[in-house]
Image (tube, rainbow, N blue to C red):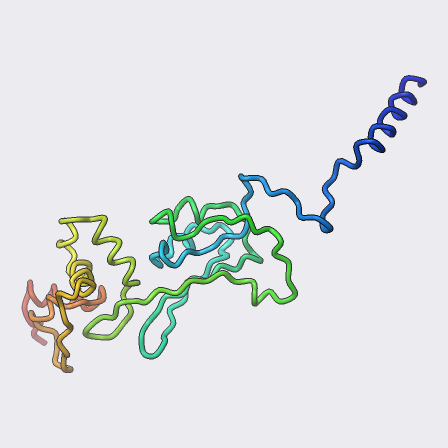
Amino acid sequence: MKWFKMRELVEAVTSVIKGPYTHKFPAEPTPIPDWIRGKPVYHEDGCIGCGACATVCPVRAIDVKEIEKNGTPYRRLELHYDSCVFCGDCVRRCATQKGITLSDQYELSGFDRSEMIEAVEKECMECEVCGEAIAPRDQLLWMYKRLGSMAYANVTVYLAAQEELGLRDRVPRDDRPLDRTDTQRVLCPSCRRGVTLLDEWGPIQP
């Protein structure tokens, strides 16, 4: 019993001399370790808008929305960090490994959950026939660079690269039915399928 009392006395004197073990938060900022997993942050230059981060998110904290601005389709990725568990799967599965990272921001409290959003928007390419949004332009260009010469197996991918390089101008198209001349156009999967079937089998007779 005496030993326990002596030990407590030593600990009390030590704490008076050295001070408390805890940090002085919130009076002083808490030291942040290098391995902290804080708020996920999108990077405009690195993100291609592919939506892989939303696909792998275990708590579905990331929404993929198709929006329109001044007649141009965009894909908007919204990360609701009030629902995020900071697991880092979005970072590990990012296609470019540069589109989203975990920052050192950890003080994320607020009064309005609708404002707790980290977002990025990417312009999409449109189908030249039906006008449907196909994929973000940055995603198609990234695929072109990754595929190299194999990109010429996908018409939409290499046409997107040609437009970016200024080697192709879109020719206005009327409301005529699909024909073989539409093969060399930027098309959505549905219109591409229609053109391919037409090219292979010809017009379908009623």
